[in-house]
Figure 1 (cartoon, rainbow, N blue to C red):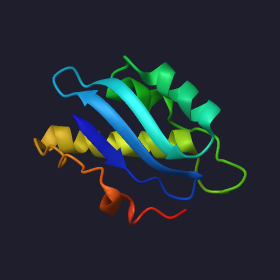
Figure 2: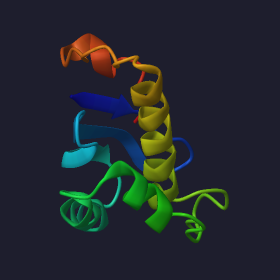
Figure 3: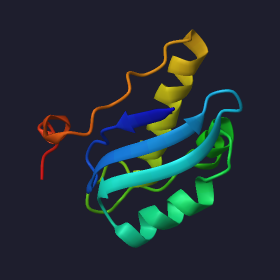
Length: 108
């Protein structure tokens, strides 16, 4: 299952998270915007991890000096908390459509 999350107050504009619904294991992570080296590194590190383990590991992360409020790891943690809640309630997110209209709300 693919889950799309729009982070707030960071350089990244979109996270696309692939998750195995049965095992709740992250099978893929991609992003738009942000620091490619850092986010690719995070993606490689979290691939194969369970959602709950990543949520626990990213708790109390330092904030980004440019945002003064949050960081990409904290925003990824929030995305996974939201995804976990949807899985817990049995609500699977609508499969995103990746045409031009899906990026209309993403600010540059």
